[in-house]
Length: 126
Image (cartoon, rainbow, N blue to C red; front, side, top):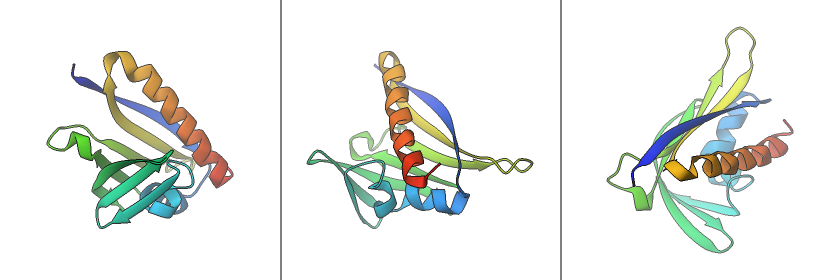
């Protein structure tokens, strides 16, 4: 079964540069995304409940976005991306999450991201 791309947008009360630190570096990611995160170059190891998952940083732009691809998805079009958008008029900052999930797992995946982003907001005091 092919996976379907989906996006969710979350308003975050933070500056783009602070938010970028939490989505791009291991110490920031381990405060909200996983129990622990280690990196060597573009290889990131995410640890949850003692289980390791490896992802590769495919692309990033300072204060703007990061795109990771899980090791299991190598040689596929699947990735997850965290994109920071700042509204020029209001100054509001949003984080747009792009991910892929099986058709029947999209709602579950969205709920998981909502939970993760709630943790991020708590860490940021947002």
